[in-house]
Amino acid sequence: MTALAVRSRLAPWKWWIMALLVMGALWATGQWSQRNQTPQALDWGETPYSGNGPPRTYAEAMKRSQVAVTNARKAAEAGADQWLMHEIHASEWMARAQLSGRYEDYAAAGTALDAAFAVAVRGSGPHMMAAAFNFSMHRLVAAEAQLAATDAYAVPPDPGDRAEIAAMRGDIAFYRGDYAKAWSLYDQADALVPGSTSFRRAIFAARTGDTDAADAYFAEAERAYRSPTPQTRSYMALQRGILDLDRGRLDDALAHFREAERLFPGRWLIEEHIAEVLALQGKSAEAEKLYRSIVKRTGHPEFIDALAAIAEARGDKAEAVQLYARSSAIWEKRLKLFPEATYGHAIDHCMARKDWPCALRLAEANHTARPYGEAKIKLAAALLGNGRIGEARAMIEQVLASRWRTPNLHGTAADIYQASGLTQKAEAQRKLARAMNPLA
Image (cartoon, rainbow, N blue to C red; front, top):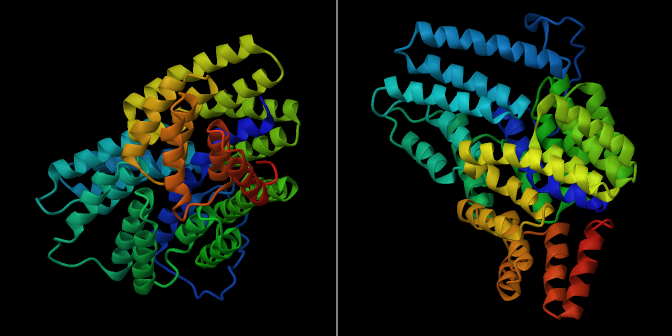
């Protein structure tokens, strides 16, 4: 098991889990700067109190989030017949979930939204918040239905909300593999609020092979903040690091991740990317130590799987089996709680364990829920693992015929063509993969 294999299990999910944080934050500000404006790096001071500045560390952000959730819950209990109070409660749980990554926090947000709709007059309710929640759980049909409800409002949403509605519809189109429609909807959003889809366009560009454009769009997204907080600046440094990581520029990626850590210390999301680079650099002991720390604090199964891969790489099969068994139990719980949001990640777990029937079952479900490029690639890989080479080739060629362009696409295509006996095509795809990322 190579260090690159560890990365391959973590890479597919990282963009879209993290994207929701910035997209939501930009929507919430409602204030967009000019594209040529440089963000103001304010000195927020050392105070830990929310009234005097934003949190400067992950630990402080989590403390404040707990206070916010508690206060919102009390307000919702006091105003139980007011759906807005329940929506605020849901929003605080969503903010906490984006920090913690815990499915239980997302479930609490869903419960609060259910309470809001239970008391809302027909035709009213937290439709946009519910759309964001369902989108984050990969429930595209449900998210689309919530957005459709806003079309029937007696008083049309303001331009900012209409821009977010168009942008979210663009995200849904992206997940359905309709990239032209996604881009068109982003254009509609930007016509309402210029620059409002810069972060989304960066993700789009990164997944369609234009990393230089992705970097430029991230710069635009960062300029949208008039006074970026330490957390915001850290997050954008993280994004720059991910771009470098996807291009195989390990030293540059690590420098960005260290900067992100300096700006907003203690966040596991940053630390796991540092561990990822360390593993790729062959520093397995350092990577393992960091992963163990992350697992101790979060219990997230994808990082338990990363530890299992490291154990396999050093020949400790017994520990790997034990770790995979531990993560399997967590993956099962997640699949029961939010199946659509779990399919894409749990596929990697099944593949790592060489459980190809499991991988195929989840890959088919994932593709049904979100038939975009990454889902098709995983389905093709699962088909190959199950010996269904012709079907795997047909699936991967669908992606090759689309705008999707990633090292993983070309690497998977190379494996499938090699298994098909098409050695020249396999070599051509391998060259394309390595041109995008020398580590592929």
